[in-house]
Amino acid sequence: MKKPYFSTFFLILSAFLSACAQTPPPTQENAPSEAEIHAWFPPTQKELEFRKLHQKELDLIEGDIEALFFEHEKHVLMENELRDSVAQVDPKIAELQAKTNAEIEALAKKRQDTVSELDSLKSGADKLSKRIEEYESIKPRPEFSPADYTRGMTLFKEREYQKSVDQFLLVLKQNPPQALMDNIHFAMGSAYFKIKNYPKALDHLNRIVSEYPQGDKWHMSYVLMGLIHNTMGEKSKAIYGLDQALKNNPPTPVIRLINRLIRLIDKDA
Image (cartoon, rainbow, N blue to C red):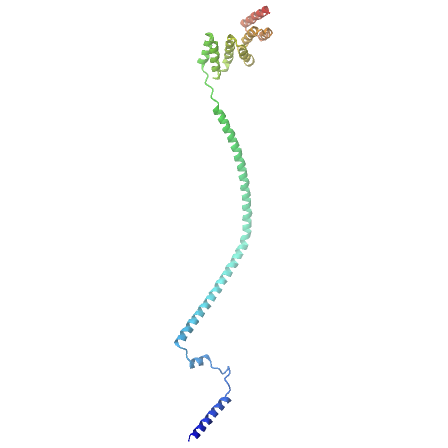
C-alpha cells in the first residue's frame, strides 16, 4: 500500500525539478526594483529613522558646499576689485614715496644747518659768557672824590710827602678828570723829588711832557726835571731839557726861572 504513495511523490518532485531546470535565471533587467523589494520587504521604523538622518546629513553637506562656493566667488570678486585698486594706487604710492624722500632729505639738511647754527650760537654764547666773567671780575673804579684830591694837595703843603703820594695814588684809581691829570702827576713828581726818589719823580714828569703838552704844567715839568738831572750830576740832560722848554714859548715867570737855573748849572760846571 505504501509503494504507490512513494511513486506518486517521486513523480511530482521530478516534474518540479524539471520545470525549474527549464525556467531561465533572472537577469538584471528582470531584477526587482527597490520599490518592489520595498513592497516585498518594507523597512523597519529604525531603518527609516536612520535613512532620514543620513539624508539630512547629506543635505547639510550639500548646503555647506554651496555656501563655500558662493563665499569663494565673493572672495574672487573682492580680489579682482583689490587688484584694480592696487593698480590705481601704485603710481600714487610711488609719487608719495618720492615726495616723502625729498622731504626727508630737506629735513636732514635743515637739521644739519640747525646743528651748525646751534654750534655757532653756543660758541658765541661761550665767548660772551667768558667776557661777562671778565667784566664781573673787574672791580669798578671808585668814583672821583674832589675831597681826596684836595687831601693830597693839603698833605703836600704840610710836607707829608709820602702820605701825599699815597693819597694821589688813590685819586688816580678814581678816574679823575682829564684836566687834573697833569696837576696830579706834577704833585707826585714833586713829592718824590722831596723824598729823593728821583727815578719815580722823573717818571711822572716825563708823563706830563709826553701826554699833556697843552697843560700848564708842561714847562714847569722841564724846569723840575732840569733840577733833578743837575742834582743827579747829569748837567747835560738838565741843560737840554731846559732849552726844550725855552723853545716852546713858556710864560715870562717860567723863562726867568729857567734862565736862573741854567746860570746856576753853568756856574757849577
